[in-house]
Each structure stands twice: as structure tokens, then as C-alpha cells.
Image (cartoon, rainbow, N blue to C red; front, side, top):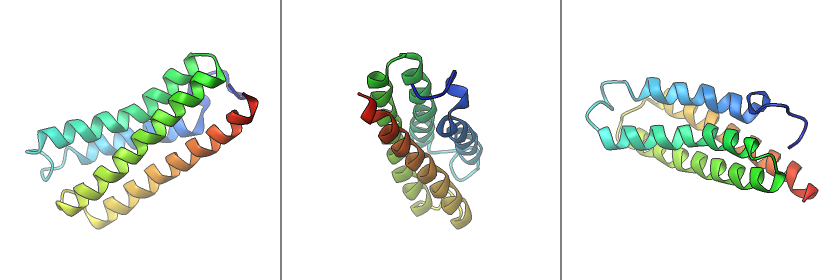
Length: 122
């Protein structure tokens, strides 16, 4: 489980929490408003990142935690793909696109590093 006593201490969870808020704020823009299915999907995928980090941590075994970190990483990939679609549909600006892409890519890299750190211990 690493050196953490709670999932709230984990950097990737902290950053995904901030990222979730950004996704919610951006999907409130008028450009998104009529695309209810897309809003629900990108929000669910974003929430899945932080939720899986927390759930995996609470399982109290490295093996299960790693599994949930992989699920969180997959959700980050899903959101990344959806950010491209949001940009292609002109739901977000170029600046928003790059900021969101940078944030979710950083989260994904943090998750990869954490998985590598925990994996040799199995």
C-alpha cells in the first residue's frame, strides 16, 4: 500500500479530484448543454479515476490496489479520448483542450509510476 495512511494523501487522487471539478465546470458551458449523453459519459469516466484509486486503496492489498489503479488509468485514457471529441465538436476551446489533456496525462503518468512502484512487491 506504499507509505500512505489514506487515499487522500495520494498525489494522483488529489490531482484527479481537481480534474473532476474542471470537467464538471467545463461541461456546464452552453456548448455542452444539449449533449446530455456526452456530459454524463465524460463525467462518469472522470469520476471513475478518483473513485477507483480510493476503492483500490481501501481493499488493503497491493494486488487489488494495483488492479484498481489499472482501472483508474484506463478511465484516464477514456477521458483523454473524450477530450479530443469535445475539442473536435468545438465544445471546448484550444486552451481548455490543452489544459485538460495535460492534467489527465499527468494523472495517467502518476498512476503508471505508482503501479510500477507497487508491482515489484508482489
